[in-house]
Image (cartoon, rainbow, N blue to C red; front, side, top):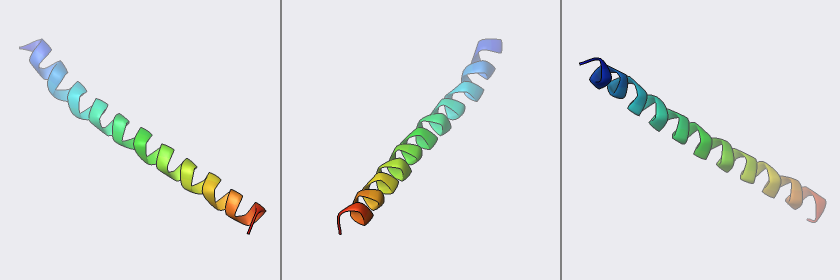
Length: 41
């Protein structure tokens, strides 16, 4: 029972962490692209 609760909590947390990581990568890529766009118009 205990491991079920742990997995039930850990799974969405890991999913959220992966989503935030993807979002961070997208934001960083967009920021880098915008910076390059400013450097060479």
